[in-house]
Length: 154
Image 1 (tube, rainbow, N blue to C red):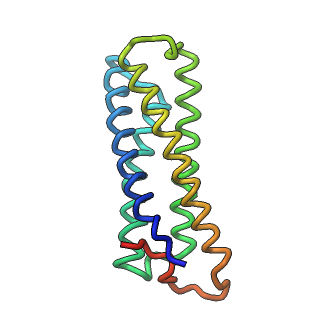
Image 2 (image 1 turned 135 degrees about the vertical axis):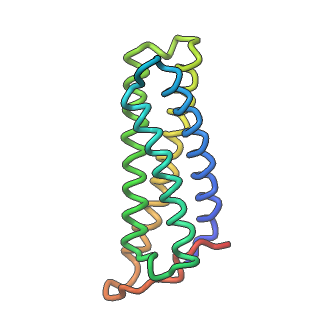
């Protein structure tokens, strides 16, 4: 049960994370001289977390099979999915409260674009979390060893 489309999803997740990181870093820097909103900062954190999680999710199954336990992969997927959900909802609420929807301020435009990419990232991680959960539920409950069927198809 190798998922041949897992690697393209991971690449898309990495590209979108880098886009969100750039947009949110700009928004955090340009929002004000001495502070930036917590939801913007949280999305910067989430983008960095995602890059680190993707390194684990791509490298561990292929090079370190003992470190790629099925529950570890499911945990990394689920936590990252929850972070993206919380982040894009929090930023959407903030942008609505400060009336960014009708503003030509470049920080608002960058934040809106970053929020859209964050929502897409949540959907991507929702899909990969469902795939990981299905893998956990379908695999043997007594086996604690790494399953090579869950490896990234290269």
